[in-house]
Amino acid sequence: MVLHNPVASLNSNRNIDDDRLHVNGNNWNDNNNGFAFGMALETKAIMLMKTYKNLYEKIISFGNLFLAWRKARKGKTKKDYVIEFEKDLIENLLKLHEELKNQTYEPKPLQNFILRDPKTRKISKSDFKDRIVHHALVRVIEPIFDKGFIYDSCANRKGKGNLFALKRFDKFKRKVTENGKTKGLFNNNLVKGYCLKADIRHYFQEVNHSILLKIISRKIKDEKVIWLIRQILENFNNKIKGMPLGNLTSQFFANVYLNELDYFVKHKLKAKYYLRYVDDFVILHKSKLQLKEWKMKIDKFLDSELNLELHPDKSKVIPLSKGIDFVGFRDFYYFKLLRTRNIRKILFKIRKYKLGELPREKILESFQGWNAYAKWANTWGLRRSIARKICLNEK
Image 1 (cartoon, rainbow, N blue to C red):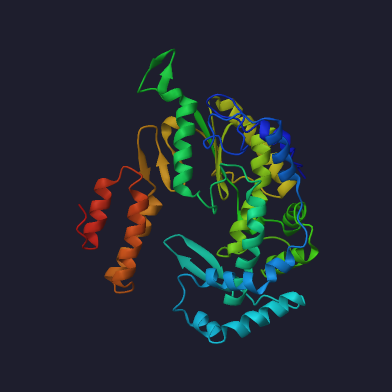
Image 2: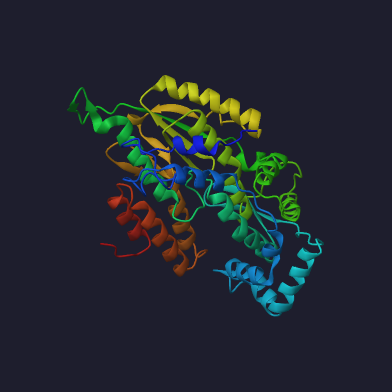
C-alpha cells in the first residue's frame, strides 16, 4: 500500500506558472502570489498525518441523524416511503439511534432496477432509513478525507463537478500546447501535445472491501465507525468487492479509493496535468512516449495496490488535435462538441414525452438542465432544434 509523504505532496503541488509552492498546499489557483514558508509546511503535514478517534458518537447523535434525515428527504418529500417514515419521525429517528448505539443496526436488502437513459445501467436503491445512515456517516467523515484529496479530483465534491473539470482541462490543454506556439511563432493550424485518456474497467464492481477499509483505517481509528462502514459495504450481492451504483456512500468511497491513484500519479510519477472524474482520468503531456510509459506504470500500480485494471479499449494515448472525450464533451483545441450519447439522452426523453410517458413539467425540467450543460459546447443550432421539438421558444 502506498504511504503518502505530506511534505513531498506539498512540494509537488506547485504553481504551474511560476513553480512557487502555495500556502494552502492544494490549489495553485487560490493563491498565485503566496509563498509557503516552514510553518505552512509543518501545519499541512500535521493535518495530513492526523488520525481521528471517537467519531461514532458524533455520527449516531440524534442531532446528526436529524440533519441527515433532512438531506435524505430533499427532493423526495412526496414519496410514499418518506411520508410513511415521517408519520412518526422522532420515534423512528430515536429507534435508529438506539440500533446504531447498540450496534444492532442491519441495512435492508437493496432494491435493484434497470435504468435506460438511454444507456442501460443497474441501479441499486437503499431503504430510506439506510439512506439517513449514509448521510449521517458522510456528513462527519467526508470533511476529514476531503482535506487530503488533490485539487483536481473533480467528482462529487463541493465546488467541483464536470464543468470545473472541463475548465481545468482547457487550462491544461493550453499549457501543454503553448497555445499553438512553435519556434517562437503562433501557428493556429498546429496543435502539438497528447492526452492519456483512461477508464478503469468495471470500477464500482471491482472495489475491494478489504483494501478500502485499510485505506479508511489509516485515518479513522474508531472501530465502531469501521464496523458501520463494513455493514454498508457488505449490504451488496458480493461481500468481498463491489459497491452499488446509486448510493451516496459509493460516490464518497469511490473518491477515497482512487485517491491512492491520484497520489501515485501526482507525487510518484510527477504528472503535472492530471484530472480525474470518478473512474475516468486524463493526463496531458507534450511527449507521447512519456504518456505511454506512465500508462504502463499506472496499470501496474492499479493491479498491485488496488486490484483494478485500465479498460483495454478505453485507455489510450490520443493527439490533442483529434479531440478528447471527457466529462460529456468532445474537446478540440478551438471548439467543443457535445457527445452523441448526451444528445441521444435528451432525444430519448422527448420521445417519451410525445408518447405521453413523461409529463410536460418533467421534460421542461430535463431540458433546462440539459440546456445549461450543453451551452458549454458549440451547440447553439442544436439547442434551438431540441427546443423546437418540445415546443419551446428559445431565442
